[in-house]
Length: 402
Image 1: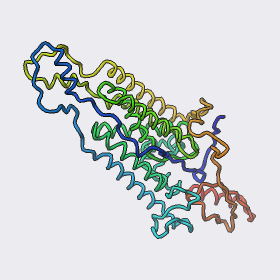
Image 2: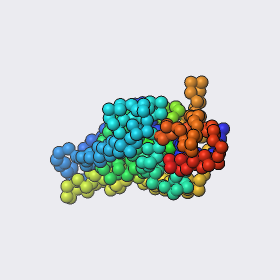
Image 3: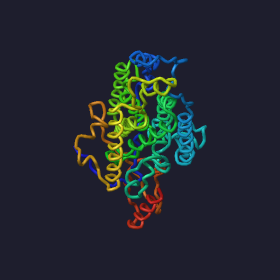
Image 4: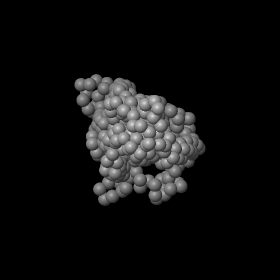
């Protein structure tokens, strides 16, 4: 089944959030490094040179103080507060949730069950809207959408996951590598989402979060020889990733952003998170006069091969994706089954997005539809006036102001 394309006016836009579900709080870096002292002693035992004295425990990798991930969390919270300020629900609605919050109160539950703003407000703040990216050349939406959230529940789930996953990675690899991994993965997730889901707007940091998961997996693979308990760690990571991707087939979850972010992060992990071998560190720490039996290279051959292949695939994938998106290509037309990766219809739910309808009158050349702002709907107009064309002009002018 192919996805039909048709122009969607701003009033029909519906919000699809990138939701993180399941297993978030149990995600940590699951492996420990083998002590390099053990590898040093083995190397020296096989050498004919006098055994050097190694003082203290070897600490080959620097531990970083994590500040960037908490800063990302603060930035996401600030963006949500600004979005709620712009939304100003009491100005346009009567039945806002938590009206005591004033202009920070939430949209009616039927419109946004996540306790958040309207889709129109999210669009104003930079949500991913494919039509605006393609026709308006607003490519920056591929980045800004990762810093917006559909509601309080959506924000809490993603930020807790970011703290659990991101802080440990930043401690191990530093703010530069983890920051680039997060931002580029989010961009990759938005890009794949835009190629397949073109009738809704999308927000959320889930693509970037899946990028961190993908980076953890590739980091374990490329640094395989320096870790203990690696098989158990590999199985744990694969199960966590598989469960979260499987939950993405539920409706209203943008699994294409998850997949795109994961693939981007997986390739980036081979590039950014590569570790030198302990044998190379041992040579640098050896005392003067010690001649090792063999010279150890900084990286193994398979690490270098994975680095080159991953970098080529990443650059090619992002470049091709951007070209296809800016040319207005709908990927569903070339892959009739791919939509099942994001939603699988069952007897319990449908994957089709159904518009809401509102029957209102035009009287005295004024549109009487108080819920038009911030609501996804079609207008079916009963014309009670003689000048039908003039009233249609009024309707068109109203839509242009949205």
